[in-house]
Length: 268
Image (cartoon, rainbow, N blue to C red; front, side, top):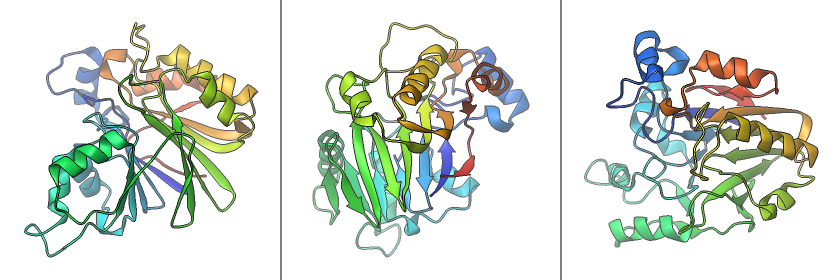
C-alpha cells in the first residue's frame, strides 16, 4: 500500500487563521514542512481517510483526481474531519454526476449528519462499528476504538491488503485496554499516529502530547502490535503545541518516530 498524508495539521491548521503563536509565525515565514493543512490521508489513490475543509486545496496541490476514489472512510464527526457541505460539489448541477463516485463508511453519527444534509441523494453509505471489520475493493478495514469523544464512537483504522497492515490513528487519546488488547500481536507494518499537543501539557484526554505519543508507540511495540522495523509517522499537529517540524524531528527521532508533513508519501 502507498500512503499519502494530505494534511497533518490539527483543527486550526498551521499557521492558524488568527494566531501569532511562535509556531504559526515561523510557518508563515519559512513555509515548507511547517505549513500544515487539516488532517487527512489517501491510500493507493483509492481510499480517502476523512474529508475535511482543506480537501479541495489538497487535491489541487497534489494533482489528485477525486473521481478515482472508491471510498471515503471516516474516523469521526469533528468538522476538521467531516465537512459535509463539500459533498454537494460531486454532483449536478456542479457537474454531470447523478451519484457519488465513492462509497462512504462511517460511524452512525457521521452517517446521520450526511443523511440529514442530503436526504434524497443516492449515496452508498455503510455504518461502521469498532472492532467489526469490513471489506472494500480488496482491503480489509477494521475500525478500532479511540478515546476521543464521549458522545460518539470515534474510530482509528487498521487497513490490510496483500499481507500488509497499516494503522491510521488520528484523534486517539490514550487508548483503552480493549483497543490495546485488540492490537496485541497485530504486527502492523506501519502506523500514523497523532501528536496534537506537542510540548504542551493539557488536561484534555482526547489528544496526545509528545510524551503520550511516545508512550503509546512503545506500548504497542511491546505488545507486538508493530513489526520490529515498522515505520511510525505522526500527524494532527497543533500550533499550540509549540513544536516546529525541526523540533519534532529532534524530540521524536530518538524513539524511531518520524514527524509527518503535508504531501509525505511512503510504502507499507
